[in-house]
Image (cartoon, rainbow, N blue to C red):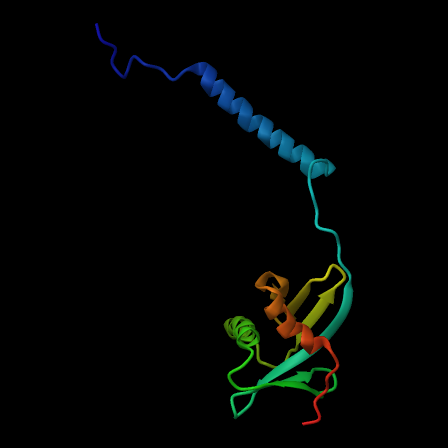
Length: 152
């Protein structure tokens, strides 16, 4: 006589084994969370240099960069250049529009002690880690930290 599918049962040993594996995984995760053993954490970095900047579109297609605190012009991004900087700023501006924030609050460009560089929107707290986009794009923002005040 042939066995039907109704007569077959799932092996209890496999079911208990799977349950034990799930329970052990949850227990190990909870232990690691509470004690910190077996986990890794990124080292805390300190601010090395920081600058609050405002960016304004110019009628010629360029972008003027101003130091927020003094209103002093830091640089002008020539028309058709600095595509990465413009792209990052467009993304941050899109976030500002969705949260109905104007263009007045500055962006904070920060160099960290671990070598990272980030730009953060002071209004939306959106932060972009710039090292993730390669050295050339990193350098496009890093130069804005240097005090190259324009006499334009």
